[in-house]
Image 1 (tube, rainbow, N blue to C red):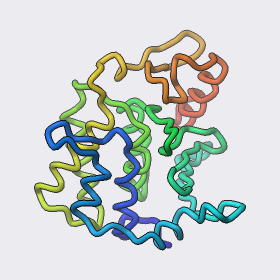
Image 2: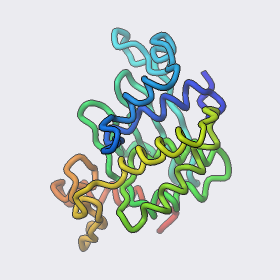
Image 3: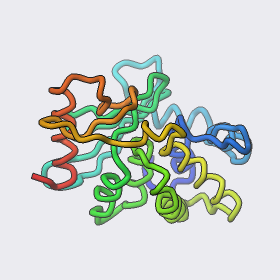
Image 4: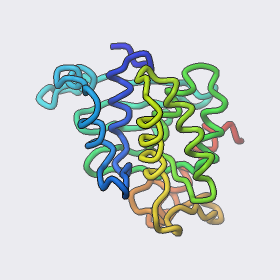
Length: 221
C-alpha cells in the first residue's frame, strides 16, 4: 500500500485521526462529516492498512520518517488507533483511550519545516498530537489549509474551509488554561491536559525523558 498523499483513501484515513475535531455550529464531529460527504475507504482497505484484530502478531503498516540523524518518527496503524513514536519513545495514540496533546504549535512547525520531503504528509501525521491557542488560530488555519491542498482529495472551497475549522478545533480547546504549556525546572514543558505524555500529572522522570526526545527531534542539544 502506498502511504502517501497521492493515495486518496489514505488522505481520508488521516482525517479520521482527530478525536477532538468538531464543529460547534454544525454540531457534528469531523469523522461523521467525512462519512456523510465522502466515499470512504472500504472495510477491506482499512484492514489491509491496520491489520486484522484477529491476527497475532499485529500485521498492519508502519510509516517511518527520519527527522534527523538521531530521531525517526514512526506511526503504526492498528485497528481503531494510530500509535506514534520517536525512535522507541511512545508519544501517544488516537484510540478510544487516546493520548495526544503533546507538541506546542511552534514545536510542530519547527519539526515539519525541516522536512526535505513529504512535508505535508509529516504535518498531517503529527497534527493530531499538536496543541494551539487562540492567538495562533489564524496561522494554524492558514497552515492547515495549505497542507490540505497538497492532498489528492481535491477539496472545494467549502470543504476546505470546513475541514480546516474542524482540525483547528482539535488543537484549540475552549478552556484557555488547557492550551498553554508551562516550563518546569529540570523537567521541561508540561501541559494541563491529562491525556498527554506531557501531562503535569505524570512523574518528573517520565516527563523529562519524553521532553529530551522531543528536543532531539527538534535538533536541540
